[in-house]
Length: 466
Ligand code: UTP
Image (cartoon, rainbow, N blue to C red; front, side):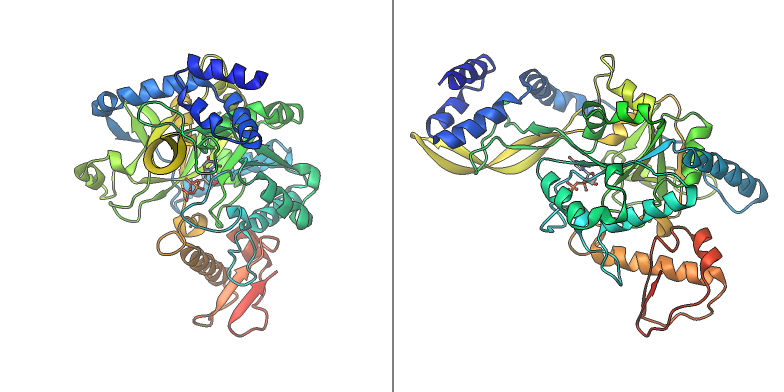
């Protein structure tokens, strides 16, 4: 078979001849699938990742200097209110002109949640059980009504969940959105390798590979043609968010305005840490450059360091909500920058190995390469970091129970509703233990809610405001 011969040469040339033994034990169909996978492998990249891996012990010992980032935060002072209004108006202007696209990254594997299906399909809302995708769609629909423009919504999926995501949208009539405005782009996959730089065969006789991380979105926007499409339709800025946060304020005008007003290239929203030991990345400076400091990188003294006003020095928790300038994303993909760097994590894996001429399973350690969106920060010349209130904007669904689980997210959603109800001044009492949900189509921010809310509908233990 010509194909086997060709791939054999490539494998031998790249020191991956062990795969030949696997191919020798496979039936035609399996062989064909594996060869197809192998054809996609960028061996040059694999080689350079393995070289990086070998140098990790030395590079890890390099001392990094961490400092805090400048953070924009609005208290209730007069100056602050005026500035907030100014920035809000800038964001609204862009929205009214249709210059902002919405971009959701949803290609992750959601292993910790353990839900059978794409995480966006998870039923999360406390009264109606709406999925994350539905909440986002309704938020976008409401934005469209407010600003009189249709916003393109790009959703990044991976090979593993693209089909299911698409069929969810189709089955649910694109959740009320115009089908043509919802675009799916598939991120690339990248193979894992072992401590000797060898490719790994998984138990299903395929190459062990994974989606290339949320940072793969930068490449996916470019490769899919989405950036060109955006350019042609007058989009200048991209609102980036992740699939697990039901409290996200999509294309928040204040955030957009803060970013646009300084000609930001990538900007971030942050929340204050709950306590010094919270395991969250910090938007800060690494060797003088903006970036995300991982919680494991700060010593226990640094984590506790305080400013004169008593607040923590490293306090700006990264919630993975960004504004990306379209030209900047283009620039990140240029020959000069060559995209974002890969991080290499050691993971447990089950591998198929050839022993005495037959296939057996073995538990091994593998190296999983992944790109992270926050690495784009170090390339930016201008960036805004906006502090927002956690209870208003962030409660991710990561784990099946405990911290950052559906239970904590639902509670946060209910608490935010109750806060808005009290803030409206139209309701003095809210029944204890009752559940409440506000449709994003009724209001997607506290200002919108206070302007419309009259009174609670009749109900006993749960309320749905629409
Ligand atoms: P997480 O870091 O929570 O990873 O992703 P995950 O794969 O979804 O979940 P676990 O770790 O397996 O439990 C944060 C966001 O980045 C997206 C996810 O879909 C989520 O919106 N993501 C992550 C991608 O789009 N692609 C990836 O390769 C990884």
